[in-house]
Every structure is written in C-alpha cells, then in structure tokens.
Image (tube, rainbow, N blue to C red; front, side, top):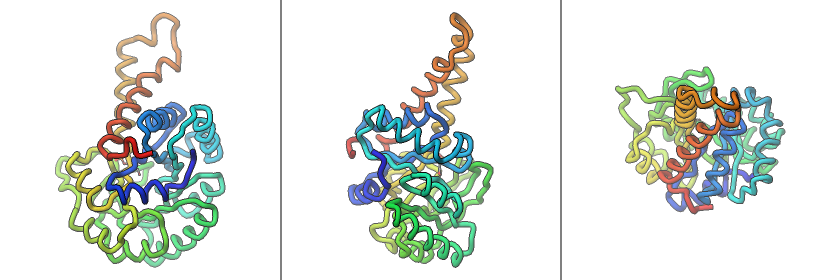
Length: 287
Ligand code: 13P
C-alpha cells in the first residue's frame, strides 16, 4: 500500500532500526525493490531523483507505475514513494502528481530561506497527507550532476528546521553520495549525537548509504537514524551483473536479443542488494 513515510519512520525510530530508501530508475528496479520488501515483510521507501523522474517519463508515469505494481503484485507492506533531493518547484509537482512523500533540499540556501521555503512546503505537503524531509548541511559527492562538498550540519539549525514540523530530517555528518574516497575520515558521531539530543523523537536520515561500514551503520541507527538512502550500490550491482551476462555472450546466442533475459541478472542482483541492506538496517519482519 502507498502510504506517507511518517508512520513507518516513527515506528523505526522507536524500535531502533532503519527503513531503507532505495532509488529507482526503471520498471525492473522498482519491481525488484517492491518484491524484496514483500518477501521480507519490510516497509520500504522508493526514492526518485529529479533526473530519474525525467528519465522515466515524468512524475505521473512513476505514480501510475508504482501504484500499478503495488496492486498487480499484491504488495502488502507499507511503501512510500518519495522525491529525493527535490527543489521547491519539484516538491510541489510531486505532491500534485500523487507522491506520498517528498524531500525538499534547501541546504544550499541561507538558513533563513531554507526555513521560509520549508515552512511553506510543510503546510502544503501535510494538507495532502504527504510526508516531508528537509536537509541541513549539504551531503557531499555527486548526484544527478549536482556536486556537494559535504558539510557537518549545525545542531541548532537542525533544531530550527525540526521545529517547522518536518517528518524527517537529513543532517549532513560527513556522508557523501557515491563511493567514499580512500582518505574519508568517517561519520561525525559527535555531531549526530548533538543533533539527536536537540531534535528528540524526529527520525533522522542518513544519505550516501553506499560504502558505509556495518559498524558505522549500526552506530548511526543507535543515535537516531531511522531512514538510510541507498542508490549507488544498486547501480553497481546491476551494472556488474548485466556486464557479466553480456560478456558470457548468452544473450547473443539462440533466440537472439531478448530484453527480458538481458535485464534478468541485474534484477536479481538488485533484489540481493536490497535484501542485504534490509537485513543490516533491521527492517525485515517489521511491516
Ligand atoms: P548513495 O548513492 O551513496 O547510495 O546515496 C544515495 C542517497 O543518499 C540518495 O539520496
């Protein structure tokens, strides 16, 4: 069932586990995540970046695809369809199209402007029953051509944004999108602890979930992280499985080119990655 992310994340925060946000790029990706959530009785969040939204045809197409899969595959676990790193305009477009959750990333604005825009979007999202994530302190790395240097969020600014009534908060703590560089110094748990003390029961979000060690993931959850975003790792496993299939020449023999066969190994690879993450985050059996 398509639901806002509020209830599943409040439950996760109280139960000391995290719900995975897995970013989607196409039908196979979406189906793999939904079926894995159902098989493992886990709540799940489907993340859509603006670039992926454009690639898939637009937000209406995505809402139709996700709702159709939930119905046809009888997905009986809570599913949130969430805009990832949305601009002010696209957060509104997604709410209008029927997304059940949006992220407004105002981290590149001044804190005053971030507060003004977040306040307006919180009211609009909540009037439609949609949950909303805000961001303080930019997440580093590159996503959809947007490059952030990564900064540690100020706890007092986090508290100011939390008080606007957002349902979840992404606070930069040295995390970055994509692969972590060899000289990465790790997550700033002191900052996370301070943020969680000031923001109380509000679910915190950890972006850049690819390449963070098991120990750091567990420590983040113990310090109030209840949503963890994963994108790059699914892309890497999908690409590796597809490449192996092509290199083995299987799709080039017999019947010839068959897109269903070509994409099958990547689909299975995503299912495995999603299951591993759900296990690590502790969300299996929580639906
Ligand atoms: P990765 O691409 O590092 O997995 O991060 C995903 C993410 O944070 C999406 O918002």
